[in-house]
Length: 351
Image (cartoon, rainbow, N blue to C red; front, top):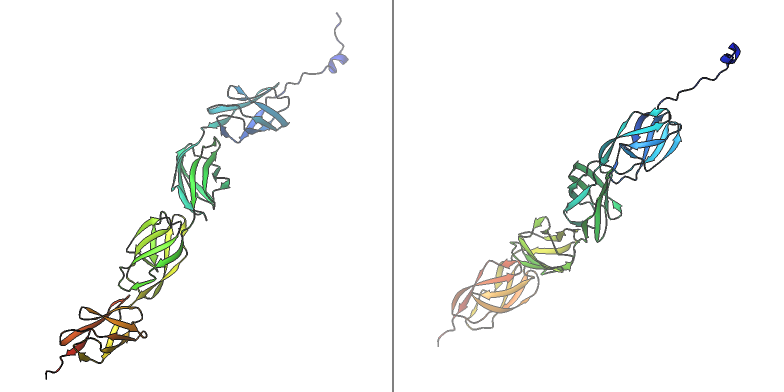
């Protein structure tokens, strides 16, 4: 066999050995234990890729987008695994990929809030770290904070009815817990519409969505007490106050519209004319003072008298019969009982 000539040796091709691929990053670096998510592998030397591995498992599929990028579908797995790429040049270095545990929710507190939204809600569960979304029905939370792996604080958006609340993390989406949107209470009537400045009047409020009421307020003062009789009625005890105030109810759904409640001062008597009369019934007596509009009774001593309200400053009464001598005359109104003035009954002369 003849040796090759020097000229032939000079043109003989030299074998090229391909370099192993290099991985620089995996995005995202976490994903659900069930797999199935797309993962982008960045690096170099990706020509001729023969396998993409997540630990000991092959990717469910992959596409070599370029010599520096591969898009792979992660298989199922647990814990943290090494992602590698194989080419004819060898196996790349590894980059860590973590399988996140599936998140879960066990409770929401409070379970209800106003339809307008804005309620701060605490979600309790597990695997909540790295949450990427909190959803009320189909609407994203207005805002949320991941406090720990077991707790998220979220702000409910506006909504209606009962909605499922879910949390999405790299590990997947939780099952639902339910949040209930509640309408704000509304008021249609208050009875009575006025009472004494000293308070203590039992007031019946009529309206809708009153169940779960947390406050009844007269102006800026809370009711002395209240009872929710039904979804349409509340009985409240008016606190002390003055003038006309706005009466409102607060419930899980928010603040109601307002109705006017008026505090009435006790009447004041300044004079009565005439100041005396016969012991028998029938003398017409004019009482003068202030705050007489809502007069409900005129008494001579303990005996009620017939009366007529002429104005806020005058009441005409008919003196009842009684024993001769002085007797205290008072007026009672919605605002309370007045001071007293003296009316003197005179005995008939003896012939």
